[in-house]
Length: 252
Image 1 (cartoon, rainbow, N blue to C red):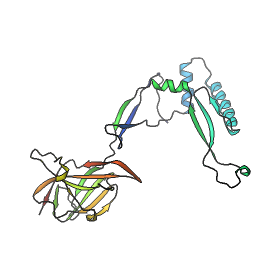
Image 2: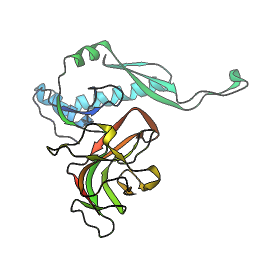
Image 3: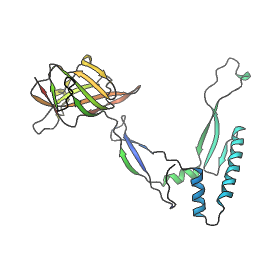
Image 4: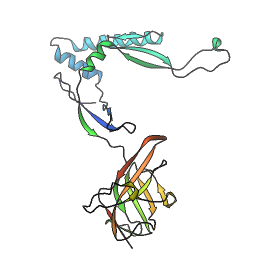
């Protein structure tokens, strides 16, 4: 149960997730916070001095009973001019003799009324967080000795820990990115060194393990990038890439 204020204020925030199909576009999500029936009754009593809270609660129970009965009979019910409740079959019906079938398995659906639609058009929300869907590298380890001091051995193995790391797709993979003179990552992707797919020995959302290819020059520092175009069972239109926050040095 959430805490609610008795003042009539709109005060909530949404989270944004980058849309992988459109550049500079985000999908907004409203965190679900449920207000209970008891809290609604408390608000009615607070905003309407002298009203009997328990009588209102009893009336709500009577309304609920009638609404459920009418829905069970197959009617669409207008609920206080806010939305319409109606029922619909859960799935399609397969039969060689459809006229002789009895359809079972229904679910409740809702359609907002015009009044609610207009009311929501005036709502404004702040942004509480931007949730990045790109791979997130939190730690780079040397599996040989378990160290995470930013040093890797050439031709030996390496381990990445983090979130959303699983690589996949045509351009997916693990890349070593050379540093520019100012310490930034080289933006020219033709200079990036890809770890061969068959060098990757573990590929999960929280951990990647792989062998360093001989093509990586030693004595130099690199950022590591993880690129994928797979999210669950879905292939994204545009690959997403996550980068290590600090560079690592590849030693002989």
